[in-house]
Length: 335
Ligand SMILES: [Ca+2]
Image (cartoon, rainbow, N blue to C red; front, side):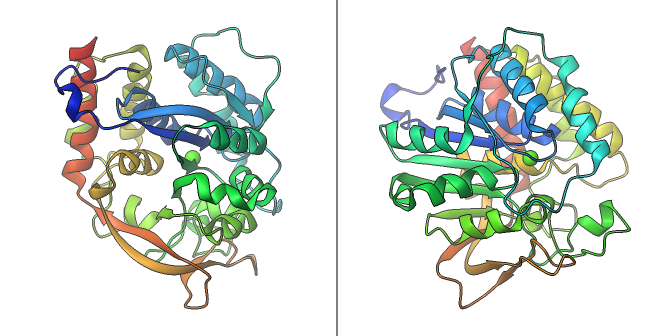
């Protein structure tokens, strides 16, 4: 893994061992590239969840991305079927994320067989020399199954960062699909509410990053200003995968011209993993609603919940943008 050439060795923090669970939507790619390129992070494995991209095309896309990043040795896990199995991301999004981004990723020889994701998570947690940080950017099925298979795993987990939930801002399901009556939930938790509940109640140290911290309605969302995307995409790319990141951001920005800032949900989670101080956190006891459908996946404060978790309600947008800009600059110097 690259280290910043400007940091004296004694100031280099130990690398965080992480496992990423992803559903390969466009913001997942931005998050994954950020984490793969970050000098403070060692990605031990990536597991593919049944989310925006379907599992099989998601596996292929993930293998191609890792090969382009020069990290084809990172093991990839094949996700399990949703525990709740009644809600789904919109089919058109799924088709787009199965195949649209793949054109940016050169074809490579990809594994014929993938290990089962919950098993891979468990193995990698147990094999890691230091407690692992899990980065959950998708419905929480794989994490829930791993934790259920061995409840003692939480003792070897440093933290779980989760992209999901909504507290003080409206949900997005009804907004994205007007015929759906659910006005309170976020997609990852709506798609597999049971899995979300299992992970939130696991007793692991949870850092939950809901729509309050990442979406337009939040009071200080960790999103990109239009000018930050301009700066990021005009700078010479430090690597092939960084070019993928900037192309995705440019394309997304063109669709979000009218928005005051450009949301990049899972990318905010990635930046918080490397620097939790970017966010404003509150410690809360939280539950996840399983039913009725109009509330499935809703997150709410619940004094009877078994454990407190940390919830991010916004953060320092300039520092968030600077985290991406600094990474691009430092990697250029290092290469
Ligand atoms: Ca995602």
